[in-house]
Amino acid sequence: MHLAFDYHHQNYQRVHIFIAFVKSKLITLNGKTLFDKIWDAHVVNQIEGGPSVLYIDCHLIHEVTSPQAFDGLAKRGLKVFRPAQTLATADHNVPTINQHLPIADELSRFQVNKLTENCEKYGVTLYGLNHPYQGIVHVVGPQLGITKPGMTMVCGDSHTSTHGAFGSVAFGIGTSEVEMVLATQCVLQTKPKRMRINVNGETKAGVSAKDVILYIISQISASGATGYFVEYAGDVFRNMSMEGRMTVCNMSIEMGARGGLIAPDEATFAYVKDKEFAPQGADWDKAVAQWRDLYSDEDAVFDLELHFDAADIEPIITYGTNPGMGVKITGRIPTLSEIPVAEQRSFEKSLDYMGFQPGEAMLGKAVDYVFIGSCTNSRIEDLRLVADFLKGRKKAENITAWIVPGSKQIEKQAQDEGIVAILEEAGFQMRQPGCSACLGMNEDKIPKGKYAVSTSNRNFEGRQGPGARTMLVSPLTAAAIAVTGTIVDPRTMTE
Image 1 (spheres, rainbow, N blue to C red):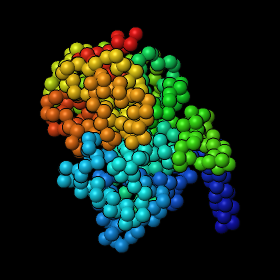
Image 2 (spheres, helix red, strand yellow):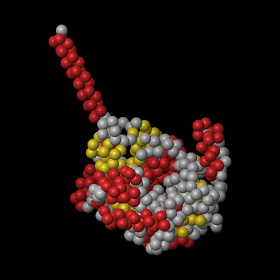
Image 3 (cartoon, rainbow, N blue to C red):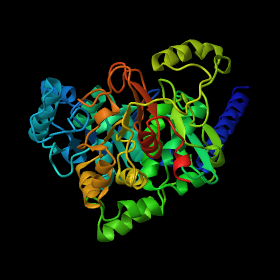
Image 4 (cartoon, rainbow, N blue to C red):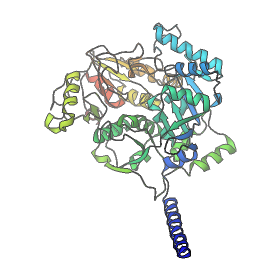
């Protein structure tokens, strides 16, 4: 009996070992997503039942979320573990006029000065005010070739997802995590689920990358991608410029995602090539050969997959106080009956703040300020588009129009190409690089009660200043509204 039991028990074990083996093979037979490939290659250790210890290739820092992190290092007597993989720039609360003068705001001046002190103390490269590479952190990285395919990148800023346009895993982290990365070059992270968003077909004339992502967010809501890392796929993204892809990935966080990315292709390689910190010579050829393997396998499994038709996308404008509250510019604000019961109270609160009514059309509404800038839409492609539209036109008398380049390099390029002259002739004020009116953290604020159309990424209550009312749009739509002084469909002015 004992021998018989052992025999059957051993067979039982063999069967389960075989089943486990088959399951493991089935798992490996399933292809990997692009996100999985990059994430898995950077896992230093996996804590059982907990987060991954993820190695970070590049750590971007700025003046707002770094002082406390550096202070934590000092208190523990630690150094920056790998300063060569950390890059700093001043952007969030810097003034965008007279940057050669001492900063007037006391807190802003303290934070910028502290960043300078900390970078000198810990050997971190800093592109501070008046440096030829200074600018918005998520503009500087790509334009210098610091951002490359296959990397892991973090920053104490939610819109770090911008860098995913190059096929990298990039996401924002909190101040305590900034300290963790400075000290160890690693961060503890729970692996997100995988989502793929496909947009196929051809976009209509007048529809930009900003409209594409605002449309997607309006369809799935400001929380529709919570818990996911999103891969964007399909004709629309393949045909999109790199700067357009950055706009899309930038706003992944606005639908709750941890980040977003797009598989690198020839457009990616061409954009990175010959940038200052891009690989050179034989190293370039080797890098590109590796980058060509960065794609989701055909049999890769996503936790959620969504499909949209490009033909349905038109210029979009937000009407509420989160980026998911958007409609086609020719459309109207939803009525209360069109809103789920659980969301009706917040919907009414949002419209009350904005001074709008359910069912109203967006066309014809008065606007006071136009802001073109931010890490979403402040690149040279955005400025060129706006200048092309404004050539021979003037802004409306009732409009205060600011345009803020994303970096000193873009500022110089705009001057060299004659863009600045066109913008100033049209009545726009060309300011100096910084986050500016994207957020009420510097001097560029929208006054209480005033309406602003903005190419930035958030329209929260008070985001652009206490009591400011923000509507998110594309650069083309913003330029058209600046000319008319009211909300207008830009296609009626370009056809």
